[in-house]
Image (cartoon, rainbow, N blue to C red):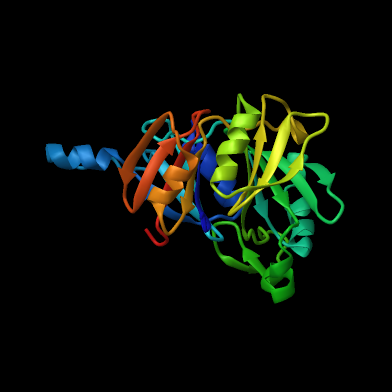
Length: 273
């Protein structure tokens, strides 16, 4: 039913410091910078403020997913204190440990894979996990994205190693059973349940962890009002499968938007739209 994970939207208060972290430390290159005042300025016949720091949102492509950082000036706002995870290759993971050593990352081994955890300036728990085996096999880890977005050789110790996608997002929920039921109806499959903690992990276009309020590894928390977009050939069928929805569906470009029972914003859109 859901064929791709199109967007993860996060809220940041200070977009300048957030951009410095994601661009200078993680090597992400902005694909789109949004400045809504330009619309109002055009209506008034004035020139919009496009000076550095005036933007309200920025978007980065990480694999097939757009990571969008937004100031809380419009809806959907984006998630707050959200634990989410980037994928990298096992070789590149060692490079990330070197690049982010000054941030004192928390490390955790899951047996077959390893992860490190750091916090961005907005308080999101950013995980980088060595889960990308396909990238390792194809040799795509030979180069990375250098600071400022330049392509860099693997021998460049100042370069940010490659990130190949977003593979996990943690959502805080109030009723674990009800949330699990809704996402299973959308096609997600349960792959793990917590014993000591009230949590469930579901596999789909992205792995979703549903947590009742709690602290996880590195004191990570499930995000509140997280903005998620999924690709599907039939947005109407996806909306029907997950119904009823407290809010929506509302039409958006190429699809439909709803709000689930915990305030998370889900957009279902056709591929390429």
